[in-house]
Image 1 (cartoon, rainbow, N blue to C red):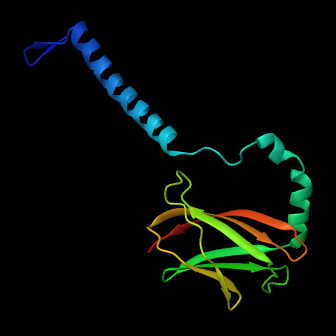
Image 2 (spheres, helix red, strand yellow):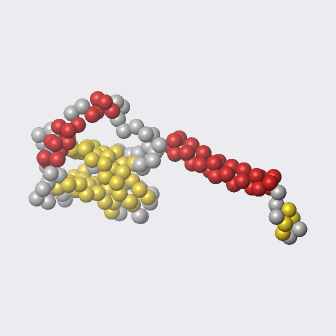
Image 3 (spheres, one colour):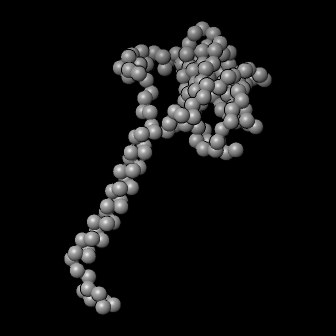
Amino acid sequence: MKGNGRELTGRKVLAIFVSVFGVIMSVNAYMAWSAISTFPGLEVQNSFVSSQGFNDRLARQRALGWDIRVEVDEGELLVRITDPDGTPAEVADLTATLGRATHTRDDVTPDFTYARGSFRAPVALENGNWNLRLVAVAPDGTEFRQRVSFRHRG
């Protein structure tokens, strides 16, 4: 094929083909490496042990009927836990880890205080997606575990 005085040869087509796919493969390799190197990928130390009794723990947790609402307002993380009637639930203990879904370097443990029906903790969050992995304990000792994802727009 001729055009503009230059001939498109098989070598040129091969060079174009190899160059284009080389760039694509390099970008894919870099993205895969970035994802693997920053994601901890570990939810529990031993998934088999964690799975034992899961259905019983889930049934007890669901029987509480709690609902969780999370928001960030003026540098304060607010966690509202309500019972089935919508009133604040009785919570004996609350612990949580606040962090990103993709890495653990931003993880913090909020220092909650209870006021006006909400657990409150001061936080300084950048914009983006966040996860709050919380464990609340009912007065009877029932554990309530939930991961709440939310988007912060400061």
